[in-house]
Amino acid sequence: MEIKEKPLTSRSHLELLHATGLVPLLIRIICLPFLVLCSWVLVGSVSYFITGGDLGTNLKEPREFGLRAIAGILALVLLITLFIGVWFWQNWIYLDPTTRELVFKHRGICGVSWRKLNAVDAAYVAIKRTGVLSRSYEVLLVYADGSTEPLTSTGAEQFAHEVANRIAAAINKPLRMSGTARKAGAK
Image (cartoon, rainbow, N blue to C red; front, top):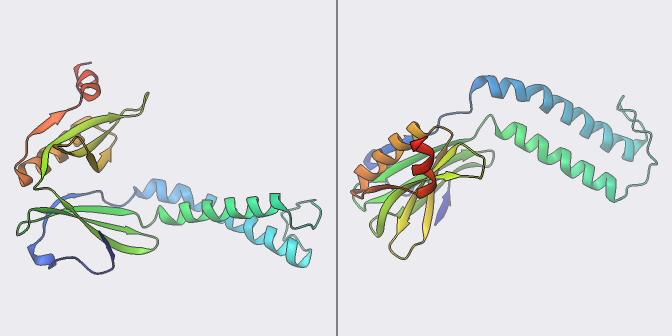
């Protein structure tokens, strides 16, 4: 269940378990020149196809508005959205003590969204290493039927353990590591 803008329960009752924080300032600053470049190329491309003036982008393309032009403009719009999103993305995980549900809050380009996750029926909290060559870890909520629900992911195993321990203690469930994370931790 996902609701935009309104919290699902009173904020005063929610217990904060995890907050990702903003993307580091250095990464956000590095994204700025790419944002400006993509915006300039997008405006130049659109103006070239509309007016014939290229605003210094020197496209040297026929003025046909074909599939390549549409694909290029869509790619630029997606890149601009990504670079703008870096400034806003942030996630929080709360525990609602009255219902024993996990409440997720996400802030992004489109505003704030909230969703609830039933933690009462969960069997345990797990840590799983993601990717083949990756060194990132995912904290999962595992149910008795074997289904999983991702809670958060991180690049550091120790941080994943801290978050998983905090969540497991809050919802009174055991913490288990998957086989791939256990092997990686033994190295």
